[in-house]
Length: 178
Image (tube, rainbow, N blue to C red; front, top):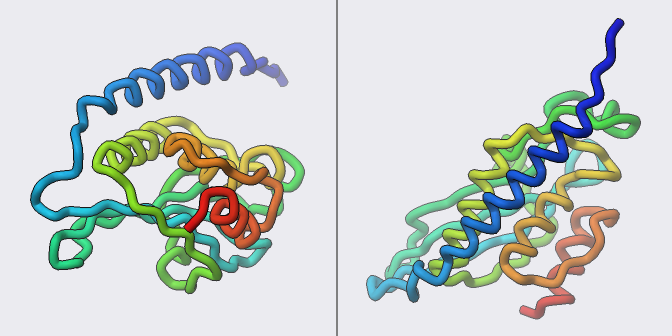
């Protein structure tokens, strides 16, 4: 059996992704202020129970002047194989909405208002991360690590990833205020 070292390819992919992120976020100044239509934007960092230790994910959207949600997006890093395998080695993962994100009630929600530019920044990050091949590992890249990338793109201070999801979201709130 022939083995192949994929480390150089991953390094190149990570470098390209970093450059794309930098280019995307440099354009934020052109986004302008919130629209005069009364639309508001928000993001929820949420944690919910799961079969293992829990799950952290984000929900972000737009609310019109009447308070009705006009756009709602879910995203989280989800293992695409048995998560038990991810305790021992990285497994396939993807950034997406998981069915339990709407079926199970969150144990904690940390909601923040966003500007239009921040809303667009989060959307670009999620789209970019969805387009890239993902791996999930219980220690090295889990759902908290995905939420950390979202928090960082918003300039938020964040707790370390090796916390249960509900503690991670509570820590995010404690570090950044109401």
